[in-house]
Each structure stands twice: as structure tokens, then as C-alpha cells.
Length: 110
Image (cartoon, rainbow, N blue to C red; front, top):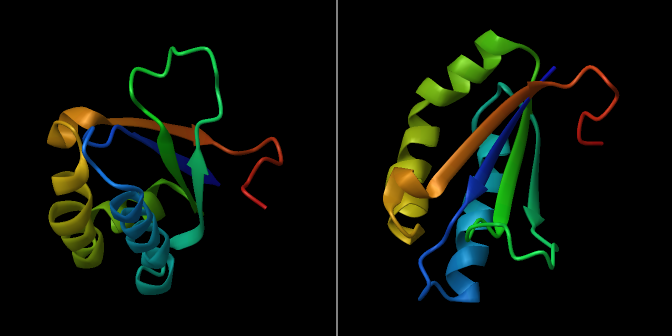
């Protein structure tokens, strides 16, 4: 299992409604892209003030690397990313931090 984590830095003027709309669009990808096994949205709760503006994260789980690659190339992912996500971010793709890991330790998003 591959866990694909994307940390997001929204524009400072992004409303809660905008952020919730982006979250819904990202989570709804699970119903449109068969290779996504699970999708979860997280808000940063840290009080350390070291998040560098990355206050939200989407985590997606895939069976293997080829399933992740299929998701990355999927037209629905491209549409959601280009039309909904990127315009809401502070600096487009520069406001994304991606961390993929092998989820073999039982932390598969359940």
C-alpha cells in the first residue's frame, strides 16, 4: 500500500468555504478514480507555528506504485488539480508539499 500525502498552503484570502469546497472536490476523487483505495482530509492542529503555512493535508491510499501513477495521469485528477485546487493555493504548485510512503505498518488510513 502506498500513502500519498499532499500538504496544502492556501491563499491568505481563501475563505473557509473555499477550503471546504477544495476538500470536497479532492475527497470526491475517490468516487471517480478507481485506483484510489481511500481518501482522508486533515487539518493541522499544531500550535508550534512551524507549519510554514501548510495548514491542510489530503492523504490518498493506493494498492501500489502503478495505481498511484494511474491516479496522477487520470483526467479527473488533472481537472480537479488545475481548475479547483491550484487557483486556491498561495503560489500554485509551489504551495504543495508531497510525501509518499509505503504504508506497511498498519497505518493505512482506516
